[in-house]
Length: 402
Image 1 (cartoon, rainbow, N blue to C red):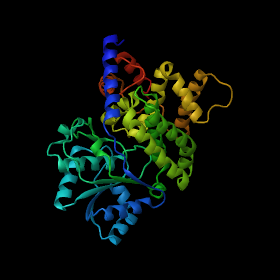
Image 2: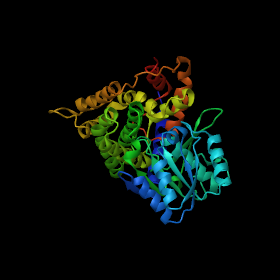
Image 3: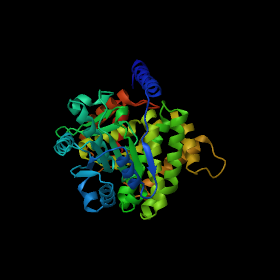
Image 4: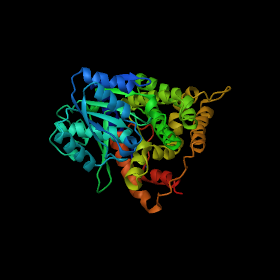
């Protein structure tokens, strides 16, 4: 059981974060949307005078030819570029440093990220390192960037992280595997393109996991004690779009409308959690990722229903509202019934998308360490609606052992 004094301390920290979010300007990127909007972004990059770009991506996307239309457009616009495609899932310090060296060697003046959350997060860190002469460990935490990063542009190829609009870059220590969040409004891209065409070939499993990641962002921001009418509006919009389009995108990967709607949902969810924050789902999922290299979207999907069950008594009204937004209300039902129905829908989606209820790599002996690290992360950074202690957290994580 958490001591009341500790809970009050955590609540005061959450209130301070809410005040900061209200006072500190949160920029939004100039946004291009729709088919081939990535090419419109290229035109805008040329128009503002950028002449040498570092394109950050990964080998798979490059080998699939996903960058071809973008690079052809840059050639047409006489914008020079070099491609750095060494980014892996959960990018590490050394990948960022290698990218920085490549940028300097080629005298690039801006960065264009094309890919999922990993290339975008790595690009943010590269841009920040280029103008701030200190290691990543010294940039970690809140508002540690003195100088504005290099001009940065983003084209997400998955609909999940919302990194194209958030103030966060997460990179990992290659030795300890601990995730290092750099949090600063200066990290938001100048411009971004949500181009559903670039998501048409995404495999069903990746589509499902990244879509559930976006849904987690929307839900955790909506139930956050730091939610505002603005963030709640974005979160509800994201939930509505995801509930109507994710299954279609998973089953029919070539459906452009579903892909474009999911891209927009991910963007809205990113806007929501940038100000309202996330919660225990992310805290536990981050540590699954750090310890077992579990993909973030998959980890969030596994943890989400357990946290909703734990918090349910304190968020019944909000869960009921999410159920209504998801078109789950079919008759005269109480808030409690609707809340249960929403959680049941999350579990149904897990099964529908072949997302496991447990984590094969999770070891019983690791649970106390994971719980401690997750609680440290959550209580310092996240405005959760209901607090748990070490015993609560260990008991919850134990439910996910295969």
